[in-house]
Amino acid sequence: DYLNFEDRMFHISDRFGFACKLSRNGKRLIVGAPYHHGDGNRDAGYYHGKVRLFELQEVVNGSVSEEWVQIATDIVGASKDSNSGHGLALDEAGKTIIVGGPSETGGSVKVYFQDEFSSQPSVAPSPQPSLTPSITPSARPSLQPSSGPSISPSLKPSLTPSSKPSEIPSMSPSHQPSSGPSLKPSQSPSFFSDRAFQILSTSPKFSNVGNNNDGRKWCLEGKLSAVSTNSILMVRPCSPSQAHVQTWFLDNGKLSLSNQNPGTLCVKDEGRSLFLRNCSLLGTSSISFTSSDENTPGAIVVSRNGKTFYVAISTDKIFDRLRLYNRQSVNPYKESWKLNYISSTDMPSQLPSVIPSNRPASAVKAFENRGQLLG
Image (tube, rainbow, N blue to C red; front, side, top):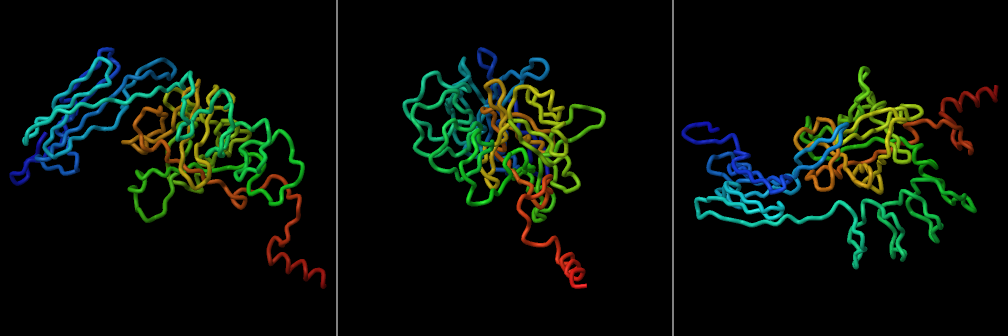
C-alpha cells in the first residue's frame, strides 16, 4: 500500500475497514479508516483517520432486499497524526460511538452520540411551531390560520378563497371562475401542465467537467432504448438536439416527457431506481418540486405510501443513473435542481390568440402588403 519516491513514503489506501463494530441488532455498522489523509496531503505522515456510520435499510425493487446506507457525516481526526478509527466501540442500539486514535503526540478517545429523528410524523402536535416548513403536508388542517403565507404553494387549492390575491400563480386552476378579469395579463398559461420545462442540475460536481468557462448547462435526460422499456434517467449536457428527451411536463404529480402525446412516457419509481414507463402503468407515487420559483434550486420529491424520497446524483459517479435517497441519507445534491421553463418563443401555441397582435409578422411582409394596396 505504499510507494517510495526518493526515500519519501506515500500511501495509497486509507485502510477503510481496519476496524469495524456492529450493533447488537445487526442494523448499524461503524467502520474506521485510520490512514485517511483528511487535509488532502498524501504524505505518509498525514493520517487524520476517518469513521463512517451505516444503517441496514430495506429496499423494495420487485423483491424485498436490504442495503447499507450512510446515515451520518464523516468523523475525521482533528490533527494530522490522529489515526482516528484505529479502535472503535458501539453500544447495543448503535447510537453511542467511541473512536480511538493512537496519535504519536498522546492518542485520544472520543465519544459521539447519533441524534435520532423519526421519519414518521408525531401523533401529538408540538407545543412550539417548527422553524422550517414540513415537506409532507398535514392530513388535517390547522385549527388556527397561519400569520404569514406559506413559502411553497399548496398542491391542493383552498376551499375558501383568500381575501388577498396571491403574488405567485396557482399550480392548479381555481374551482370557481373569477368575478372579473385580471388587470394584468398572465405570464404563464392557465394550466401548469401546459408549460414545458427543463430540469437543470446546479451541482458543483459538473463545474469541473470540461472547460469551466464554457457556460455549459446540465439537464435531466430520459435515456430512451428501442429494445427495453426500462429506460433510465441521467444528467447530460443540455442540447437542442436532445430536447425530445430533456423537456418535461408536470401534471397532477406525474412527470412526463413533453414530446410524448398524450404523456406516453412518465417517470416511474421502483425501490431506489427511476425509469421511464408508459404513463398508464404508474402507481400511486407523486412527484413535486420544492423550489418556489425558477431561480432558486430545490429538490425533486417523490412521495410514496406516506414516505418521502429525493432524486439525486451519486456522490461518486455523477454520470451514473439517478437514484432515490431518503431523508437520512447523506447526499449534498438532493436540493440541487432548478426548473428552466420553455418560453413562448421556444414553443408555438396550439391555439390562435384571442387578441390580435399590434405588430405585423415581419417588416418585409408589411412592406409587401403596402405595395399591393398602393398599386
